[in-house]
Length: 259
Image 1 (spheres, rainbow, N blue to C red):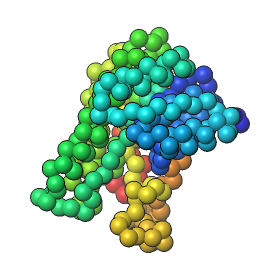
Image 2: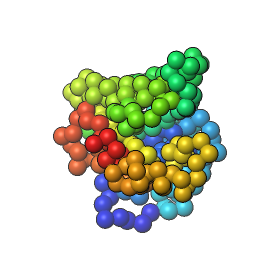
Image 3: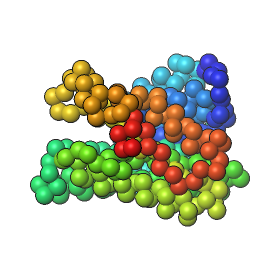
């Protein structure tokens, strides 16, 4: 893989859940560019293999593993696969998440939509973190975990996102609390809360790219959506030795919309 100005993860193994598309794929590619061996995980094999192909085409090493984050057994198997292939688990990014019931007021949110978001966005992060810490605490150099929350969990300005806001706020609190629990194990835990980012999730129903751009000029002080690469840069910073004393923070990347 072509060397970059920084190569902070050379020889290290990074695991990214929800890495088949969007922010997760961007994070996986960013780790590979900086020398990491990357394990990409998700429920669907095809997009994961596409991510692996992109990494390998650029000269990197990657492994795709299908896993459901609501299954503790599958997550333990995922961590084992990473260690079996690459020898360690140095970084984990818990990115897998879902937004259901968008636009529906809290009082009308179907119970199944609410439970799906709780299961994937909150329980899925906890179960993944448990499997990751179990491995990292056995390693001489520990490891770093970054959980992907959301600026909607910091300050929700969007109607019809109650379930998503609640679950992402929970990810932020979980990250801070778990960070205190496991720093003595040599595991640093932090979170990143992206705002509107150049992915499909940032579009409102029926909205075009031009519509979104116009909306961002009024909603975000920066005047645009963040790029996937900008969110990935925040994740890599927290996972790197540059952030060796950063523990239990939630880094908001939202163009100033929660400022």
